[in-house]
Length: 135
Image 1 (cartoon, one colour):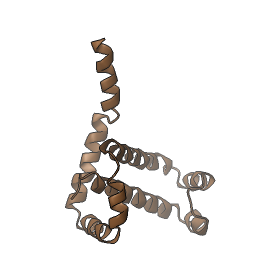
Image 2: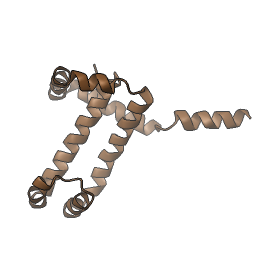
Image 3: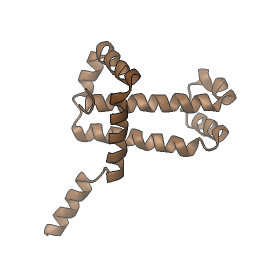
Image 4: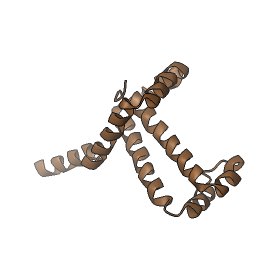
């Protein structure tokens, strides 16, 4: 019986691998050193108090889950953009690109990669702020 409950605890507590935790910590530590990111956080706190207050209602597990999902998506971008033209086609097919920007991204797939990374980074940092990992 003790083994089963230990296994359940490991499943419950272990949705973040040690590598995920290390990667997330590295991003947070770099963000804290980055003047532009810290400026973005200050602006976000000033401009979006209500939205942040709403997100602060999320549990720590929900915040960490969102951060892990964002981290996974950042890794996926790495894989997806090994073939930039294919990445644009796939993201367009999945409805992930605003129709107003499709021509621009078809012409310059590197811009889509840059914008996607920036968006995911902002999402990760926002969740880190909500979770209290960045003040």
